[in-house]
Length: 147
Image (cartoon, rainbow, N blue to C red; front, side, top):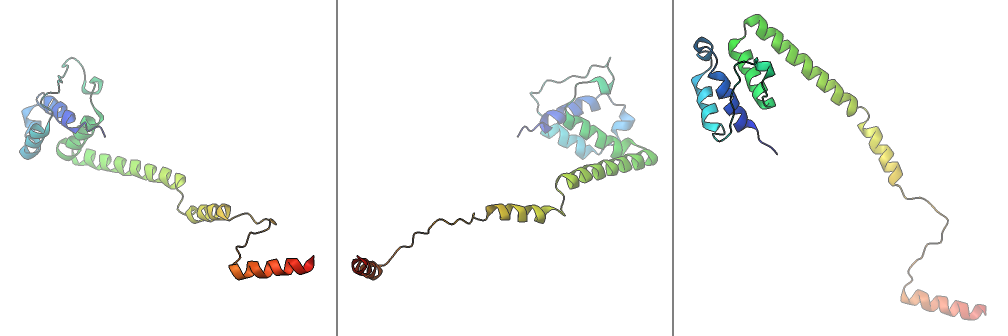
């Protein structure tokens, strides 16, 4: 598993250094300190001030962290409500796709089909029955009298 969060924390800290102080003060200090302690200090990342944030090459984790910071601390109540509604709709779409792929109503039907295929095929071939010692002797004696 590739853990990109320490690198993402480094990218977030670099981005937050370019944010105006009035916006930076809205984020809890404990969160910023957590980013600083858990970030990858050897990871080289710098913001190109000439590019917009959308044009920067950021990790997906960085984008997710910044989206959560925006939603929780910088968005107006109306923006926050619309973001929460959008996230809710996205989750519903994902759940519907999962439901189509793994239909809970058909789970048991598929299992019965698999069990039917697992049944042995009936054939008319003779079955070899192991005989005990006395049965073999009786069989031998019967064969002698038949001749």
